[in-house]
Each structure stands twice: as structure tokens, then as C-alpha cells.
Amino acid sequence: MPVNRSTKALAARYEQTAGSLCGKRITHIAYHPLLEGDDARGIVEDWDFGAWHAPTMGVVFGFDDGSAAVATWDSTFTEYGLEVTVSPKRAGLRHVGPPGAPNEVVVTGHERWAKLVDRRLSAVEICWEDVPLSDLRLPLAVRLEAGGRRGTSVWLAAGVPAAWPFDGGFRLGTDDVLVIFERELAVRAGIPGRAAARARAAAAAKAQAASEPAAASTSDPDAQAAARPATVAVI
Image 1: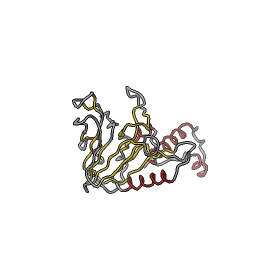
Image 2 (image 1 turned 120 degrees about the vertical axis):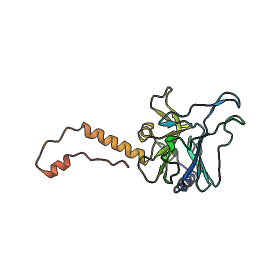
Image 3 (image 1 turned 180 degrees about the vertical axis):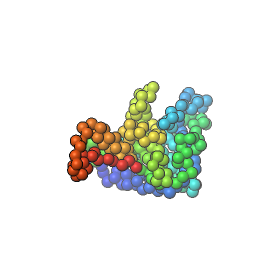
Image 4 (image 1 turned 30 degrees about the horizontal axis):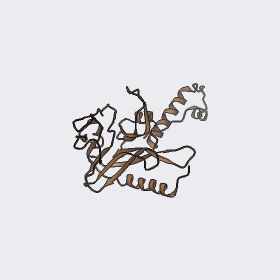
């Protein structure tokens, strides 16, 4: 299925939106999980699962310059993906939960977000998935990084656990929002993107090296160099 020019323009515009967040310092983070119950007296569903969170309807970020960004699921690119919009002033999700329900959960002080809060974003990467047999690309996730430092990445994704109780797997491309804090878990979830691709390449190289028989000892330096397995840097 070919992508028309308007869809390509939307993708280019989305890349520009993501790029506009670089250099901003996060000062506020709020989740919008679903409510349990049939009326405004419902309680907020569980959302904290350690290495991943489930703010099902979306995440709102506030920045030091007064602007805001809303990350939620949407189908602008024909299928569900993770989409981010930016506002010059404080913003939030609309029409979430019953009227008057306390569906906003502020998590600025949560320990999992400490690596990004009050630090300037150095990378905002849209993790696109190429759909087979078409030119269609879906933004399944967005990776945030602060200070250009390895280990500060956080992934926002459109997805849910593949099974419940949670067995370690995820299903992407749904009308839900996930936050993943660990690189290994993002790789396991199948999130596309440069950082995840590097981690998968490193794991594949390690597995290949482990499966190859030990090279025979030789006094030829060139032969020794050729026998050593290649390594892949993960940054």
C-alpha cells in the first residue's frame, strides 16, 4: 500500500515536532491512567510495575520554558502509534475518564524518572516500524534521552503487556500507552529504533561469538586477528 504525499508530509512534520523538544528541560510529568469503576468515584487503576509503567491514556510533560508536550496513542498514520503534540503553554489530555474524576497522577518525583527530570533532552527519537509490502511507517514509540548520556533513555510506546499476569512480553500498536525504563526490556518488547537496534546487534554478535569454536592457536598475527569475533558497540 503506497503512502501518499500527505502521509509523508505528516511523518516529516512529526520528526520536526520531536526535534523541537531537544534542549528543553523537563520540570513536570503527569500520567493519565484509566479509572476503575463506572462513575466519578472510581479509583485509578494500577500503573506502576517497576521497570515499566502503564499510563494507559497518555503522559503530559511540562518544560522549563512554560511549554508542554502530550504523548498519547492515536491513528494518524492509519494504525495505532505513539504520537506527541507540543503546546506553547501547559496542556493536558481531554475527555479522559468520567467528568470530575481524579485521573491525573503527577509522577515528577518518581524515582524512575529521576534520570530525566530537571535535565535537558538531548535526543527525542521516533521509533518507526516499516510495514511489510508497503511504504507505510508507524511511530510505535518515542525514545527520550538526557545529556547525551547512556543509561538515561526512556521509551514511550503504544502497547500493552502480551499476557496477564505479565510474562515479560508486550504487544505493540494498540490504543494504550506504556513507559519502559530499561533498554533490555525495550529490546524484548520489539521497539524499533537506533538504540534498540544496536542492542539487538550486540546481543546477536555475542551469541554468534559464543557459538563459534575457539580459534586454533597460531603464531601468525594476521590469522589471530581474523579469528577474533567482531564486536558491536552499544551506546
